[in-house]
Length: 234
Image 1 (cartoon, rainbow, N blue to C red):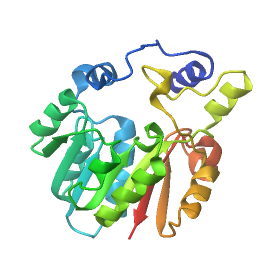
Image 2 (cartoon, rainbow, N blue to C red):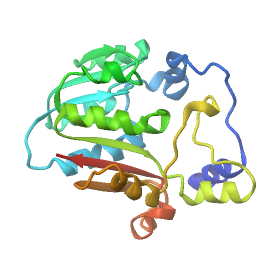
Image 3 (cartoon, helix red, strand yellow):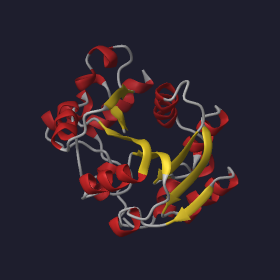
C-alpha cells in the first residue's frame, strides 16, 4: 500500500522546488540527512548487481565517479570484492563520509572532460545515477571506459516505467528530480538504452533491470522496472 501511494504521488504531485541548483552539500543533506553513509534500498540493488557480475573474480580496484557518501563502495568492500577504491565527488560533505569509510577521495567536477581524461586507472569504474545529469553523456562514458582495465558499471532511471508513462498521459512530464527540475538532462527507456549502446559501438555488456513492480519487472522490464544497471565489459 505504501508503494502504491508513492507511485500515485509520482504520477500527480511535484516535489518542493529549490532554485539552488549548484549546492551539492545541500543536496546530500536533503537526500540523506542523518542517514548519510547508510546504504539505501536502491543503492543496495545496484551494488548487488556488481557483486553478481564479479562473483568468482576475486578483488578488484574501483573508481566511483559521483560517489556521494561512499556507501556503495563500503558495501562492496565489506563483501570482499574491493582491493582498492577511490571516490570522486564535488560535495565536501559527502566526501567526509567517504574518508570515514577509509577510502581515498578526490573533490572534483566530474563533468569536466579534461579532468576525466586524467582520472586514476582502475579495474572498474562506477557511474551510478550520473549519466542522466550530464549533457555530454556519450563522451563521458567513452573517456572513463578507456581509462578502465576491465570495464565500468553505470545506471540511470527507466523513463519508460509505467508511473512516468501515466504521468505523461495525465499531462505532466515525468519527475526524476529531487530539488530542481534541471537535475536530469538526459532520459532513456529500455529500447533507447539498447539502441544507444549499439549506436556507440558497445557490444559486450550486461543489463540488469531493478526496482519497480516486483516479479513483473523481470517479465516485462521495459514497463515495470524502475531503473537499469549496465556493465560495459572490455
